[in-house]
Image (cartoon, rainbow, N blue to C red; front, side, top):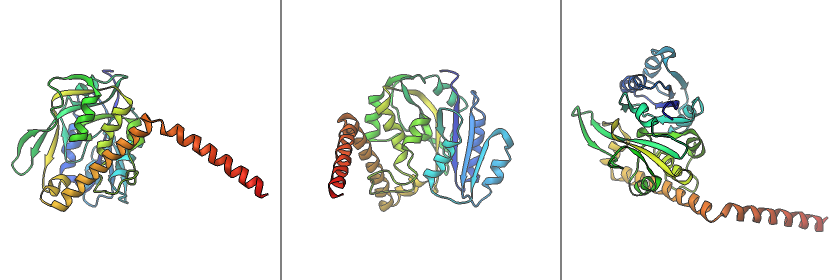
Length: 278
């Protein structure tokens, strides 16, 4: 699948100062890909930055900000390809990111990640690597990815996912059964976890090809100095993982067939009751 076509979705909101580097990194890929910038409600000069690229990118603009999940979904729905990379507007990717990751895609691979490195905006220097999932580049059993995400987490900003997974589990509202929600936290980890239920393998490129910017306006960085916000993020991720287990339980115990049988019995019972009343 070396020639697999990839769509890059860039959801953005009031980050015109970072957006250009993000878009440029996507345009500079050694493997050509579709680039979609999805802007919901920005009040800065984001529209001018995006429009300056002309037809090199697709630019989707909504004046109403309906939340980060709808922005992601809007971009995915406009994607022409079956594989998608979501690139946050304050991050960027190396020129070979798409090329090297797409080499690992095949019919058994649910998603592909590259190693990721932090970049400290205030110090203007690169920091720690984040994932270290494998010791080498290749295709591996997806069990390792599942265990990693249940204990820690991977970010969509480092991955390429199947469009079907994003559409099935990118909830515009809250995750079903969730009791906690915080600035889009939760569904991002479901992309990886739900891939483990349907596919047997995942790909990993063992070198930093995605770069996450550390800055004061970052949601995760902001939460590190606020115990209440940090707890909200933790609980939102816990709820996402609980939903994954609910979904896994439904699948493994064939709960759907049991519920379907119960529905048919209940429907017939209502018909009989209605007939007797008549």
